[in-house]
Amino acid sequence: MELLEIEKELAGPEKAAALEKHDAVLVALQGRLKDALRTGLPPGEFAKCEGLDEAIVVARKLLRLQIKE
Image (cartoon, rainbow, N blue to C red; front, top):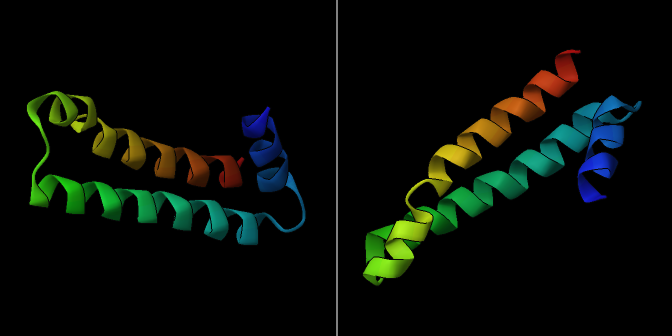
């Protein structure tokens, strides 16, 4: 349900503000991930987080693509 709400925000009149808001969340998440990886994680947790950085990059690209449509 939340993804549909984000999609509606990105298609609405305030789409630039919505993009900025959601992108900021992803940037913050990416920063927290990099901090955690830098300080060290247990092996099991590292494996779970390994692909998360790439997923964040893809999510940021998808946000921008949604605005261009």
